[in-house]
Image (cartoon, rainbow, N blue to C red):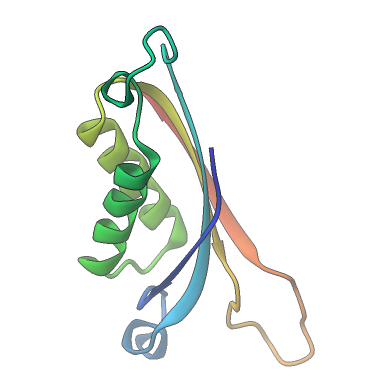
Length: 114
């Protein structure tokens, strides 16, 4: 599991959101048949998983956090064949809301499997 990976990206529905870096946080749960061998190659190396998420973030601009989360899930399943199921919770830490509305964050969660 990766908990609260902090990212900055130009993602959002409005043009203003698409033009400025905003903070996001991501939680990942990976499922697979891991742990039978005590070798890094037999599991999903979390440093490589994080690098894949950072690549998707850096090379794309999404209007919806649901689409962003889906792209991360698809990218992980494509890059790591040993992962059988992935859950992605993507949090937008400072969503644009009407004045006077306060929330800690908003999130989209997707689950994908082979």
